[in-house]
Length: 196
Image (cartoon, rainbow, N blue to C red; front, side):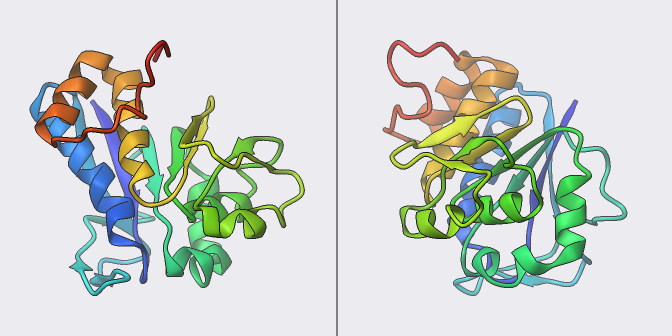
């Protein structure tokens, strides 16, 4: 059983985490052996960027070992979350794959996880990510998956990244079923001719 944690903080962009949550949740219904948890500093409700309130399942201290940690972006990632040492410590401590959506890459960069790696983010934040000189910013990439770290471009690209991760962990067949179920017409998660 793989545990997928979704890191939340105030002003996280809703689709950055709800899209991957839907992908992994649907994958579980199609046979992927995974569970999804919302992880935050504490269990108080989190207010996302557009007002959605979410009650986390667990805290940084009570979270189990995670196979995948999804780090969303949004105004909170651009501002307070990447300056929060507790968040940065939690992200650094992960032993599984850490994947950012949109400007969640700024949190990964601040935590030092992108040092020496290629990464992408939302097009409006390329210049901010380029302020980390040890990160090779890839403009125009929808997503990048490395050995321990993955990044994706803005907002809806997180769905493509999540589908690509489902394909990597549980096979392209399950990812295809999930995409069909979600009526996700993008094939960017598995471009033609690309082996997953």
